Image (cartoon, rainbow, N blue to C red; front, side, top):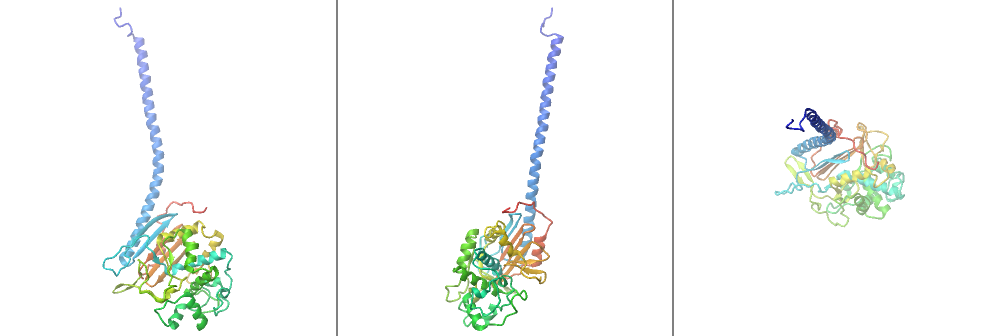
Length: 407
């Protein structure tokens, strides 16, 4: 008689088999789950790896940029820098002081406005292009159509835009004939003096390229006479406000009867001497607009660059004309479009330098690699052009391409 009736060899074997199968299934499900989990984890980590590589490249490019410009700052640069690539700001930094003459110095800020000097010309050219788009002028119109007092024949709007007018320098003329340096010299005073004194030209219209500030001063006067607005008002309403350039403006001495000691700005320009920097005083020639005297910030200029990419102000068919060579000859491998310089050795790169009364600036727009650099400096310390070119063309760190705006 079996004392344990339910414990027989067959029943024991069945029970053991069931336990074995259960354990086997448990183990298989466990390892399958582990393997599936590992597979899913690998996918996530791969995506993260690409993201991390992109971030790493951005960080490396930012460090490289910082090394360059902090080095400049140690050697005399005093200003604000913004560098962008593939549509994103990689680096921006304020390096130095607003007023170097003060014992208690105020640090520069990213949103500080600097005088752009000759970099103002690209914005003046844009104003002319907007009037062309409005149907109010043509590039091949004679300037005398709008400024009949001009005593020179055959000079067109296009000649002014591309520095092929052959006209004399207004600053040399003013230095010779303006009697009171305490009184601002204006665009209208310049035109009146040209009509009266008729200084000798440098050459015939369209004969050759000769960079000359009078061209863009006259363009500002064309803007005023065609639009029936003050130049500073037109620029604000048609460019600064639509683009969102909230800190940008044209400095005007229109209502001033006397030249102030200093321009009313928090970021003062400084002339650099061996003995050190000296705050630059205001100048009677600062009453002339169009060739200089625009104030802006690095972020406003970056906003303008994005506006060009997205064709905010002008359709691409019209905007593209600004970046076409204006002269058949390339002088020292350089040419000039509408307010933008270009170098034959760097196709697709458009730039300008500025230098006037205590300020220097650089703006570089690389449409080939989608790079953008703006350096605003409130001293006359020379920003080395060769180093800037090496930096812009450097391919040691390449960021992933992004889809261009407006495409």
